[in-house]
Length: 345
Image (cartoon, rainbow, N blue to C red; front, side, top):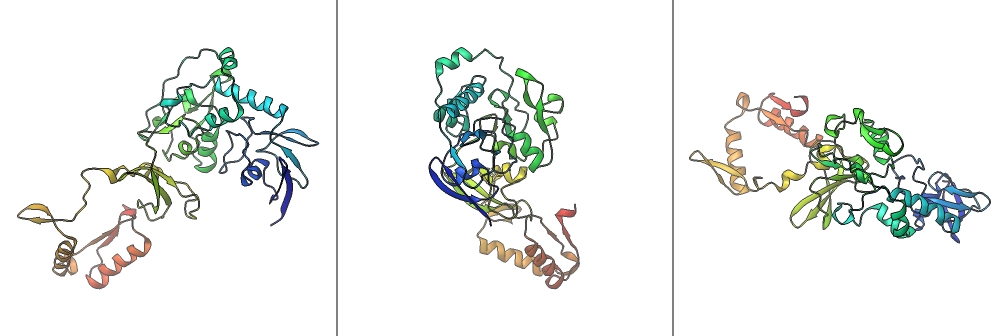
């Protein structure tokens, strides 16, 4: 793979040719503020926060400028700081500042940028103009959409278009009234949104947040059980409860993407009525039993039900190998061809 050598803030680095300056800096541990860029999406350069200075060229957008041999880049400087601060202020003056009650507090990219750039509160007060608060869209059963916290970075729009290929949302209206909306600006639940949550996990601020969100204390790597695809995910655990789910970006099956079930369908695990031990029927009532007792009962019933008395229904939640074993068991051991699979229902 061809490599390119350049210098960023006096540090000589080598990266793969074609890499953008922003990615090159990230790979070298150098922070360049940015809001609209995401590694899963094509760069657009709308937030103007990643401005850097290239010797002999002047100011450029780091997210849209490819590295070149011998390039000398400065991520700081009077001109860079002035442009960057102005861009940050224009975003913040129209942003509702209830940070302490926001789900994204301390995880918000706009907070990080404001702290890094240095914002003058007195200057913001002079620039800020009163705006009418727009109602929060709570129609979706899995996440809320708060237009008041949106910074119009477009990450959600590009996620829906480029990754999900659904295009349920887009930029709507013009000027100060510009917003991210659905067709006809209807509630998200009435749109063609599939509730995959891809836009929610990529939103850099608190405009898109999961309902009843809690931050996990730790994560457990696992595989989604909802179908036979085998998407990799990380379950966020807090105490003995699952409180979050995110796709595994290194899993070759889903590459970090999840459907609505994988992203939000974990709450059943915490339900108080979920069975935790086998139940067998005694005197017409289900009672708790040991696993050995339950398996003995199943084996006994199976031995009495060979042939036409037996039928097998397999599940898409199982692997292809498990489903193969079930149909083989039905045909060879139980002597029946009455076998079906939920995927065709």
